[in-house]
Image 1 (cartoon, rainbow over the protein chains, first blue to last red):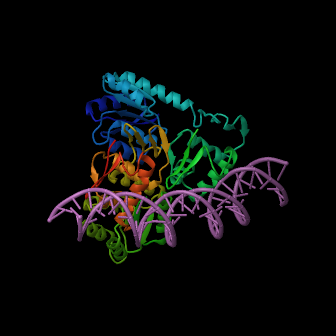
Image 2: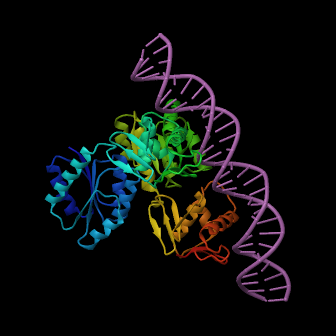
Image 3: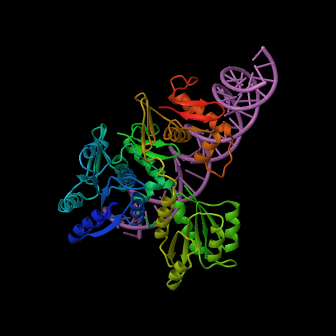
Length: 225
Length: 225
DNA sequence: TTCCGGCGTAAGGCTTTCGTAAGGAACTGG
DNA sequence: CCAGTTCCTTACGAAAGCCTTACGCCGGAA
């Protein structure tokens, strides 16, 4: 069914989880520390990640953030009993669900099913992003700026959506190429520059002094609502 | 991003590999035989080596062993199809990864990313650093001082982040140069002084009597929250 | 087929940032 | 208090990174 990466340093727990998820027809991979999780993720991104918070080498929160830098893959976090759970919610790591130990493997399997169902239904570009001056609708691929509809091309929309859905985060041109372009065509990074230029032309009041799609010198671009 | 030495005698293959790695933002150098590889390595050690096993003059295995005598630089070996691959594993040349021909350049690029990530010292810019008056966010490369956002240049941000993430610790100018600058360019230590000055201008209330980035006479600089 | 919008590339101009040098200020030890 | 360091401050040329524009190519629509 789906490929699931389980990151859990306790072998007993990992094994139980693995068995339950396999029973649901998933292809399960295991990682026993944070670094291994990142490696496996880089090598072959799974459809979902079950991530323990307490991990050797690189802790779960860091792993979660690192993955979120480049991917929207659903993540379910495992937290120790009690307070940690609440603290996490405050941290806003970008996980899709939390479940605290000790948990029943059956419940975890149910959560996995739920999250997969949710994210499967929510096809790519499902969300609607609302900012003060700009609204981006992934459903209809339409954009409104200051109440007026603007027509973007495919690339322009993808670019805007990707930046806006990670508002505030800086993306290098190389990152944008990797995320938005088909990997088997090689395009120059300057292509990104040009598309940013065209996008600005359409959504900025003064394209040469952009308010939303900002240049971060030596680093890339960042969206600001 | 990183400097990568590609050792491959087949020009077509070398060119494709070069293009794919460049697209990931790497600085790619080429060597077409084993001797050239060793020369280039001696001249300027790269961050990673992609090494073909079959090479004119000096074969890949010899090159690999020679380099391993003096360096731990990550090496990814390219091997001909089939048996050679397994035989190599037995030989234990000290390579970090193997990929057999014919390979997809995309997969190679992915392996390079994985190996680089694995060997990366730490995870740069993952954390968000919070102090009483200053917050530094590595994710968005943004800095807030007393609730107001300040715009730093790349170097300024790197400098602040490095100092702030080791709050209290003293760093000599030489240390900062070694950590924050590209190793193969030699810049004067006074450069650090100037950047500290410019940083103070932006984050200190009274730059001539700094509260956060303090001078430790005869030793270097230290950050204090 | 012809036309046209969208895309990627290349080149030149422009802005920002960087590194250096030089003179002045501040600290240290004697 | 003096000489010797070490650090601060400033200004400027060079380099790097980004913007802008124009052009050719491609695929789909007419």
